[in-house]
Figure 1 (cartoon, rainbow, N blue to C red):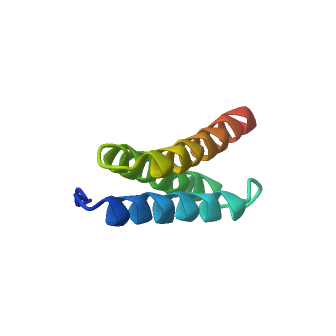
Figure 2: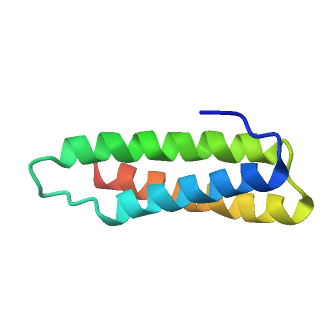
Length: 86
C-alpha cells in the first residue's frame, strides 16, 4: 500500500478503506460455509484500513484528525463485535 503525502489523498484512502471494511462486515454471514474465508478477508480489510488511518494521521489537518479518530473507533467496534462472536 502506498504512503500518501497529500493530506486529501491520505484522508480519502483512509475513508475508503474504512468503508470497505464496513461493507465486508455488513456482508459477513456466520452460518455460511465460507465464513472462515469471509472472516479472514474482513480482518485483512480492517488491518489495511487501520494502516491507512495511521498514515493519514501523520499529515492530517485537525478537522481530518477528528474524522480519522471516528474511523478508528468504527473499526475497533467491528473488531470488538467479531471477537464477541467467536
